[in-house]
Length: 331
Image (cartoon, rainbow, N blue to C red; front, side, top):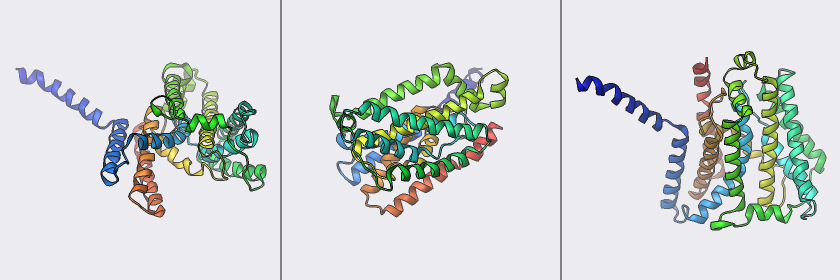
């Protein structure tokens, strides 16, 4: 008698345990910790407090860019933004030109690049919504446009410097010797999570990503929601570029180009479905940390750059391979 009653309870408990073990955020966190432990064994000091802080600081640059990428992917419709790397670079270049190593134009040096990023995101959204251009094609094409804008703006030679205040924010050590940019990243993570989980606009993004037809029939402003998603992607891409500028103090024509695909990988690692409608930013933030720790680990074991690029590419392919399964599940 007791067996008949207990069996369903045991099965439910087992299912919940398996559900926790299959949680992508938890898996990413465990892999990150394992990489740090193995790195510490292979190279003492890899897991030290200061080294972990250094890796987290670098991860924050990708993390800021992944905020916009998360929102775009959550909005569905095969949403993806392949222009974020170039937009981040353009934002940093414009900021450095305006700041010119002085705090006098710090506010303009932040606001103008942010406006540029929002504008590019706006045109991405218009192309996708009005011209019916697939997001992959539209944002890839926009990446080429932004590359041309960078060359036209700089004449092929990047100049300018970060304002000392911006550099102090990113590289300066605050409470517990933690870089200021990490505090900013934590605040951004909290605010973005509240935005997605506790506001009507955030709920609309999930609803539109889950089923645009149903969302439209429910009275949700689908066009406005998708357009906002791409505007936010451009905005946070520039935020990532500004943080990179503060870190390097100078700019390069390809400053953030290599963060485009990792921003997609970070979102997928964090459990956000590429099909849209399911996920969140906390997972993307952990995904950004995992990718950064992986890159640092491969560097620590003296793997050639070619090998690191291959491994990162393979990881990205394996992660995005779930796309087809997600589409089937969503259908």
